[in-house]
Amino acid sequence: MSKLTIYGDTISGNCLKAKWVAERLRIPFDWKETSVVAGETRTPAFLALNPWGQVPFVVLADGRGLAQSNAIMLHLAEGSALIPGDAYDRAKMFEWLFWEQYSHEPTIAVRRFRVTFQRLRGDERDRELETRGNAALKRMDEALAGRRYFVGDALTLADIALVAYTRWAGDGDYDLAAFPHVGSWIARVEGDLGLRAEDAR
Image 1: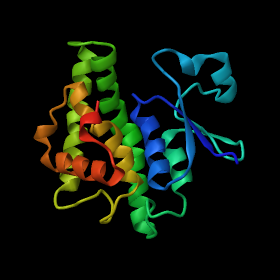
Image 2: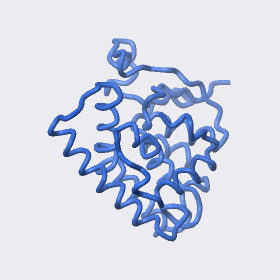
Image 3: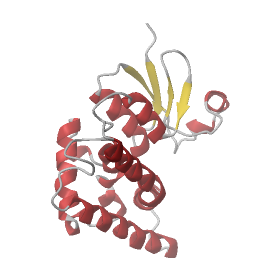
Image 4: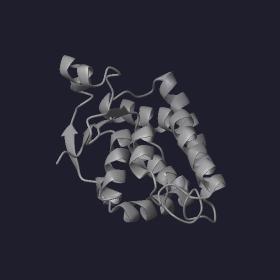
């Protein structure tokens, strides 16, 4: 029987989102390691599969393809407890998903990549990313004050989307100790997903 195939790079939080949702919901899948750094998303074979040349990319059991991490998560989690049943809570989850891709990932993830993989330091754009990333972490810390999760009182896709790169923020020289609510939340979500804190790199 055919099953889901996830093309992803394990250094990418966006790719791990899809993997974690599938694991959480016990959806059988094959993982195809596809290195962005090595240019494997730009080969003719991969571009024939996904013309956008990005991971994650999934091929569903019926052969249809789907790109974009949050779209993949939403498809996999359809009908599950990871998507709130209440209309307002569901909208709040979407609010965080949109914010994650627009204001969080372009700062936290990009600075991590520059510092950890490109070894860039002292660049003016990098200092701007530091400022914007700290503002994003502050926004999260404030939102988590007195709360266990971002929406309601249970794990949702909002938490999975946001934890992916937040748990790696130290790799971009962000000081997570300055955001205690975020730190507690990371540990909680790692526990929910069965992740090991020492693997957050």
